[in-house]
Image 1 (spheres, rainbow, N blue to C red):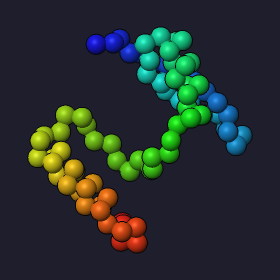
Image 2: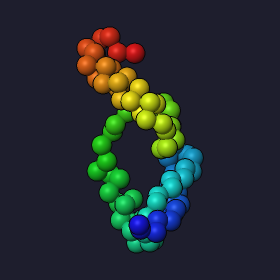
Image 3: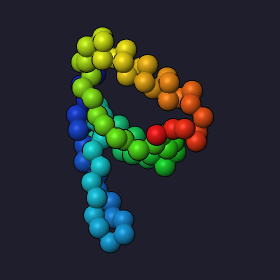
Length: 78
């Protein structure tokens, strides 16, 4: 497995300074990843973070919920 480290980048927006943490193999890899952020695709708002090691039952429940929400017409979505 690759040895990923965390690298910190800062930028200014609307008069405030913000930080961005990037996991990468090296400072050069981190800079290359940040350069690609301009081409990122908006996926939506993060409403919750779940641990990766959830039980199978939880994962199936989340999958079912997401599948049902994806099938609903836009006007019924919560």
